[in-house]
Image 1 (cartoon, rainbow over the protein chains, first blue to last red):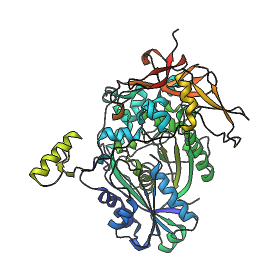
Image 2: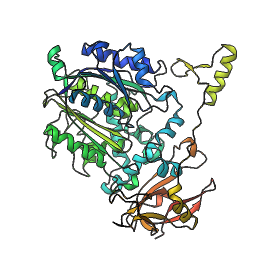
Image 3: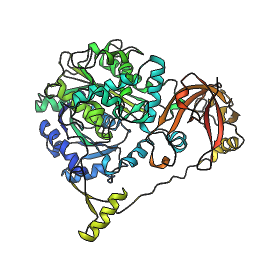
Image 4: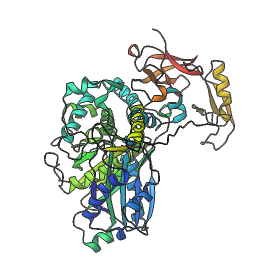
Length: 393
Length: 167
């Protein structure tokens, strides 16, 4: 049974000290339900993606059930590190595909700023192999990706300036997204002069610590027909991959095997040519938790050949008008990265872009009617590649 | 956090609740009165030989008696053969640096250390090891030869580290 996004909502991302967790969730749920034209009684199943730890509430689905006056509905909390949002979508998508549910509300929510920044840095560092990486060697999340950046620089001759160009692009588009945490453009000099966080990454190579929520309403093809839904975006396919907990158990640090695998599965199911997928896609959101991660994503997704992702950056091929526009909502870098919300935020972006509802200055040209979302948990521990489309497969 | 706790203490007296006003947004915040201190107790019952090895400055891995697969970090079971007949073997302590980083912004639990370099090396036996790099990170690059040494941490306990080989 084909599955469509029939409604989408997104909170303002940032330091949201003005709201608590259910209030922030409602900022996404309300517009999602309104745009889908559904009421609480229409929802069969409710999935919440939230990583937690840094925020006080643990029983989040029940809390939202109570706050949103839902009734007689199943629910589940999902965690897959930074891919939590996509994992939540997967649960909703497969629940409908299998015939278990007709209408599913998927919420991604994270309130990271309920804890001070050092506590969050401590907790995210534990998203690898706790015992063999964190306990004795104190790796941080920027550190895990920096190990990849160093390897990429050594193998393909990329520079810190190349990485900074990604931040400049994503801030450029973030400045056009009213929901973004950072709505300011930055210069290359500003990025290059920021302090080191984990060499070779500086402050402007890193996505921020963010509060935010995003929600989508998923419906079966039967419901889409029954309701006569006009504004919808189909989930064409989704690939999911897993990587080792320890980076030392991997053969390469210039790509994420789990992401390449997820892409292969998603492309195959969607019937997209693995060699030049960008010719069949109108745009993409990729997981730029760190600048170098965006370049690896280009290669893992086949937007460029191995070692040539950095060329796309130098030639500005991932701005609107280039080979394929990437992260024109600001990406994790400028839009912000509320871990559990990110994957759902990417789905909201796919919905907006394909239905030509994006804000002025950041709307892509919709020709093929297909958009890709690449969401990575940990450092390739979990990878999700989802293809969204105007026409069902 | 200490500033927030102080503000909350003051406000308990003056206002009646543990609250504070967020500096940037001006929004009212409740400062949690309940603090959680987490320290895990992790079983190393099946890794005893590994730590005995480190005491003798050896780096040990497990090896499947059937397929000879080497496991580092050591595993109790060989999932390829679905058996648990493993032996402990000493790894060659020489290898090649594959990648590195320097952690400037440290987790609070590592705040007593200066910025430290973390590296991944591939040992000549074929397994890879993640550890601190004891050497000048600006003078090494992927591809350089390294060796594994065991030393005492500032916190007093023994741990293996990656050391660049001169020349």
